[in-house]
Image (tube, rainbow, N blue to C red):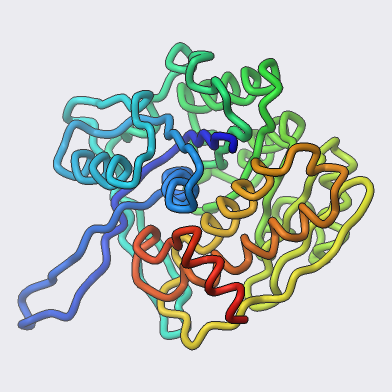
Length: 319
């Protein structure tokens, strides 16, 4: 079994609870941040996982670190930043259909923005099958340069790079700035995941198959498109296919669903040497990803509903 190493932001997702009075606003903080979610999801599925990033030396940083370590994520590469630098907070508004809107509260700089290239060392990727990151650490230096160093080191060590675009447009000065930062990372990646609503801003098309084709033309080995209720699409230079959605009774909160999808897909691939030439292995991986994404929608928070391997296999067997 391989190891999945993730790099990037980790945040406290803050949910508003029912108010006991008109002059109180109670909140519940839950750990989140896409790469941290992927690491936790992989660990819960039984694979070795590690997280690389920086946290504030504060109350929220403490509780997030406990959350990572409680499921066995290796946090030896996590750094802490002293005040006034803080752990980022993401206030989450969940609509009736389970969709979310995020409002970020970040110190300047935020703790996750301070990961530096010199913090990336070969030992971090030793024995890894996949090195995963998203676009948020690409917003500014030094985290942008650290992410480049991470991807370049993975390529040198023959570790597959998995880039989850995870576009948060309101965090960027412009879409041109986003594309300028993200496109070089596509060229360094083995696997690229986009969601259906990222197709137009990232790839200039509404068609998932066309978008996947554009990624393959850039040299990506496996393109993944998550499509919510439409399931997921996968494509390699040699084969492609679609996996239908796994139905659940109710979408409670879709936060972390894409991260669960990616983690379960990568976990299965990490256990299948030569997966790039094996369509059945890729399809099985994407099926497990789609199932894990569905299960992640069944409770509030990005991490609480992430399934164990046994839970995932029971869910798939029952459908």
